[in-house]
Image (cartoon, rainbow, N blue to C red; front, side, top):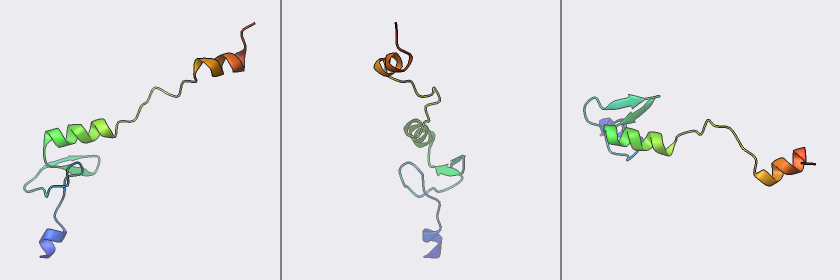
Length: 63
């Protein structure tokens, strides 16, 4: 009973992981597909914040 409560679960689909499984940044996954889906969902955009064209013109004003 207690073993079921402490079993590792997949961070993406929630299935109980039997065997070794995969680990990435402290999260556990049941398959490569689940790991890839999780990474795509939680990807951080690193390009920075771009202001809309109107705001840029309002701030720097084209004369």
